[in-house]
Amino acid sequence: MIDTDPQSVKEWQGLLDSISPYRIGSHGQLQEWSDDIDDPNDRHRHTNHLFGLHPGRSINAMTDTLLADAARQTLRERGDAATGWSMGWKLNHWARLFDGDHAYTLFKNLLRQGTADNLWDVHPPFQIDGNFGGTAGIAELFMQSHTGTINLLPALPSDWADSQIEGLLARGNFEVSVYARDGRLDHALIKSGKGGRCKIAYRGLETSVDTKPGDVVRVTADTETGTLTATTER
Image 1 (cartoon, helix red, strand yellow):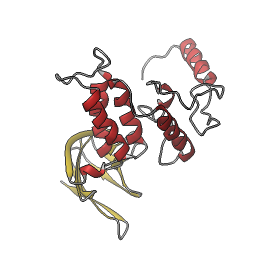
Image 2 (cartoon, one colour; image 1 turned 180 degrees about the vertical axis):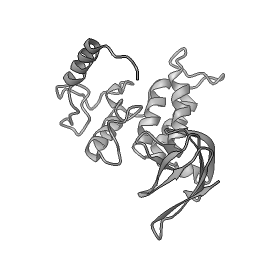
Image 3 (spheres, helix red, strand yellow; image 1 turned 90 degrees about the vertical axis):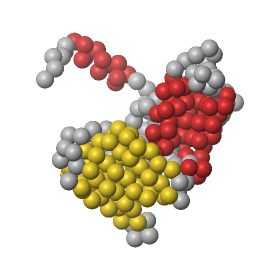
Image 4 (tube, rainbow, N blue to C red; image 1 turned 45 degrees about the vertical axis):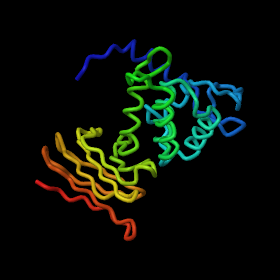
């Protein structure tokens, strides 16, 4: 049990309670300001008001469809051009909206226009958000776990129909490797670091399995029969 300062807790709770709720503006955007004053032609690189989409989790595109659509409209209005770090952020935003092809557009833009020959992110001259954002974005295309469920291939780009990624770390101390063939899940291997319940999702299919430390769960999917199978290998 950690020590807490009641006065500080009261102060921070007051600040949290005073934060304006999400609002959808007159042109379908997620409002940046309390008042509906956003300019639909604003191409500014900042998308601070989309923090709840990524890296936060207060906007869940699987359930909060109205807010997700508003965030999507904001991204369309801001456009894909930006400095390197901003393209890294937008890459992750589009991944959280499960639009792999649009996310891949940002990934290519980041490499072509926002990365120097030494692979540093270009702001200019340098800002590491783009490097971290690009790396995080690749992971988000193959696996997302911010909702407490390991969501497999949530935003796989069509150009990566046959691909694989290994060693991703998911919340709950799970190590995830994902293998895609023809744009679909071939299989995934999930190693449990500390044990516990492992929740898994793939394209609307869900399952869960209890694990012990060191267990490896093999996941396969049959979208025709609507089954997601998780088999524990001990």
